[in-house]
Amino acid sequence: MKRKGPSIILIYTLIFIIIVLIVLLTKIVVESNPKPERKSNVYIEKLEMNPYPNVNDECTFNLTYSDYNALTMAGCKGGYTRYDISDVILNGSTIPVSVIYSDKNKIKVGIFINNKRVTNNIDSVTNIKFGIFDNKLFILDTNNNEANALAFDSKGNQVYNLKEVLENSKIKDLSTGDTEISSATLDPTSFSFTEGVIEFSSIANECKNNEKSKGSHYKVTYNNSNFEKPEFINLVNCN
Image (cartoon, rainbow, N blue to C red; front, side, top):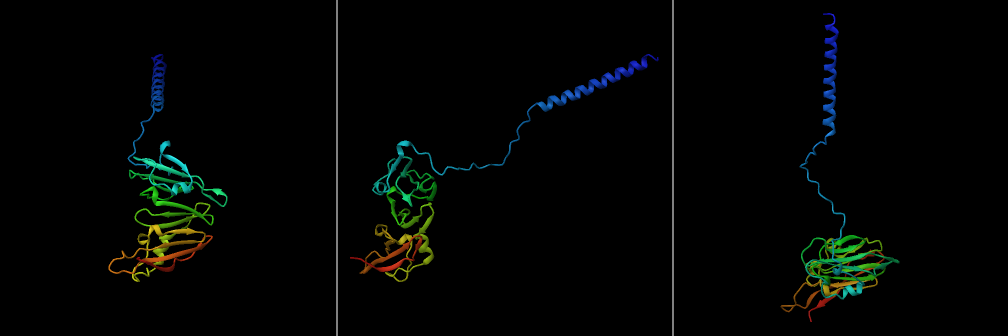
């Protein structure tokens, strides 16, 4: 009986060691298998870092701002047309300027200055005109049945927005006396840009029923980045 005691202890010890080894082996196998990925119901929106759309090479044009002003139609149909303006030089530095148009209501359209979109609506490429005066880029924007004059400095910063000025100033149209001029009542063909002066006219009447004037003529004088309030010059006669 004394011989059986140590043998039984040895057997139980071996069984315990085997059990421990099995547990350890099982743990190693489980931990070595890749854990299944948890599917999240949270939607993460992808941020679009590139403001420019993809435009086919045959629909991308490099030209001067004078050549752009002479355009009569878009260069391509059925998608985007891009115009890179090559000669906008302010204070000795070339400013990247692009006009992107689409006849298919695509979203990435507008005028881009220094790789930043400054307008986001273009009904027609002919509704944008450029000029450089006093080391500033001036833009006549006649899209959306409105007329607006914008100015940008050599860093691409907007220094003037006629539409905002008219909205804030609430200037009476002296051809009627009781209405205010706005970007929607300006004559897009009346704009004139020269060194230090912007001129434009309103359209208040249709010259019917013996109307003597159809609107009022105004000018804005500027020096560097200081733009004066629009000043009334005269009435625009109907004849």
